[in-house]
Length: 254
Image 1 (tube, helix red, strand yellow):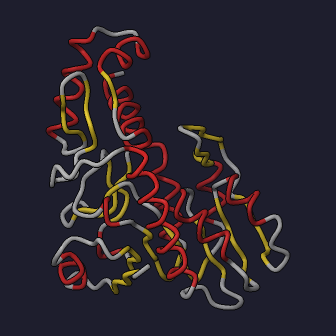
Image 2 (cartoon, rainbow, N blue to C red):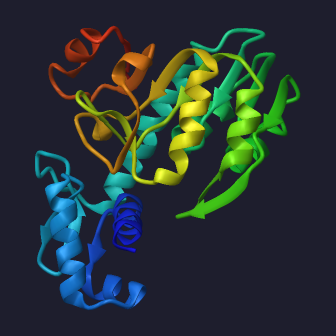
């Protein structure tokens, strides 16, 4: 239960930009003391920064700006990343599109004849209007969380293993040199790993706020990734460090 609660708190923190001890105590039916202990654990994992009455996301720099501004800024970053990632999509490609907001932005831009396989029902709905796209769903159990949806479980993994793709556009909650690509939810790991294994090229779409950060669980080593597409706020020296692992780094300039 503790691990699941930590995962849920971390997801709320990522989605809302802040959490409050009192609200979390009521939400999960535990004492405020227990929630404070949870936040201490998340702070040690470099996921949260504790403040009076709650916590904010950890970013390694204490560069805290208003939640609305942060959300708008991240949306702009994701759109920039998607525009650059679109240039890596070629006519007649077979591609996996991972679930997530950045891959959704990419899906909105696809204007070539391609085959797309995705575990994300929101991306599937978007691509229904793209007549040139041949669309496959992975199937599986639907996981709903924080306004996002993804298909997970053994059925999804089995479906993915039936195919071979030219490219996989994958998302992540964090990227760290030692632990590679990470997510907050262990439920998503098997699906992501299966897409990576079934692809010739792995293209990670990760905005700069997630670089040099950690999450709960790793799903890929850096050396398993072919390319990284990120934005111009990438930490100093990060691109050079990643290129030493063999990645080709693309930086969207806006």
